[in-house]
Length: 138
Image 1 (cartoon, helix red, strand yellow):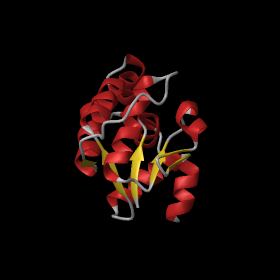
Image 2 (tube, rainbow, N blue to C red):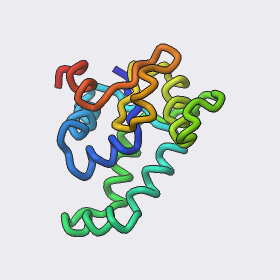
Image 3 (cartoon, one colour):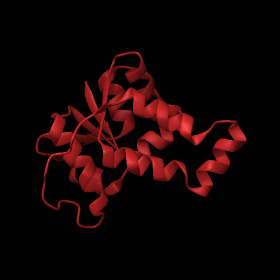
């Protein structure tokens, strides 16, 4: 199953584990394929280096660079499709949609209300991490 994870899902999974972490584990074992793009990885990098996250990671003895590089090595990188503006309330979310369209993803996984609110985009379902875990059976 090809999944595009929104940045909030990646951060949650890498830092706190839980259900989003199970999706990343599924990719590490070959049960799922995580797809990303340079713009999504850039956003992830920026988030990891926000003070609130670097402090939390330091408490855990984990370097932001290690988490980022590990995730970047796990994903398949693609070039996002060109799509028009979709999420007017948060245009940054459009890159998630464009990435999913470019790889014909089986699902977009997010906790973002803007993305979840549209339900699907060009036939690609937008689901919560819990729904994605159920689909994968992990």
